[in-house]
Length: 197
Image (tube, rainbow, N blue to C red; front, side, top):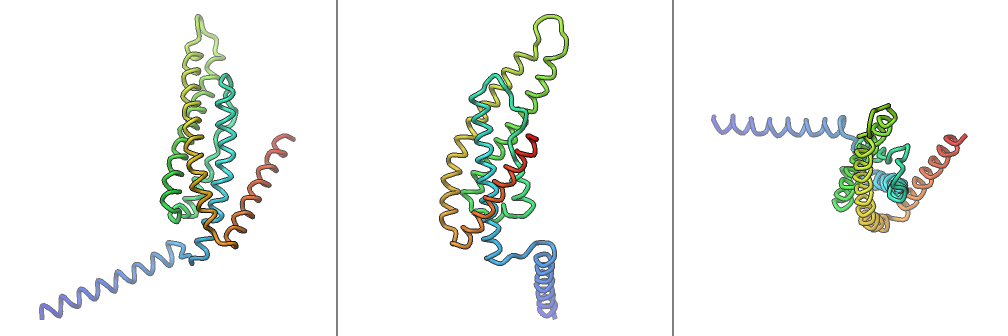
């Protein structure tokens, strides 16, 4: 009697676990075929490559013009996109690790630049004597430049790893990558011309 009850409980537990797995994967996670996953990776690589090129220009400008602080911030929309589409879960470990490092530095740089902007506004306040915000702004700007240099170093290593992954894509996946990359370039140019007008 004991073994029948134990066996019935075991079979019931396995059936419940199987049903739960089916419901979660069917309704709460997006089931993707291998082809869909590879296409998602191709588009994700295009997003990240474009964003890294943009951030490289941003970091170089920050380093080469030490007395100035850019009005904008580094671009980090790719991070949210990778997580919202669950593409981050599909990335190979070498890519994912380097990407986490770069984005953590980008978020740190974003915080530094935001602080510099606040300090610039504080410098405009009328004060008696030397303005303490000027020295603090110079220090924070220096920290921001150091972070920008780390980003450039990390991006160089990431670019090599990303290119290796892109080279391993099939011809169809490479076409998907190229189309997505060109769409981002066109979108960026359109934003620039709309921003200038």
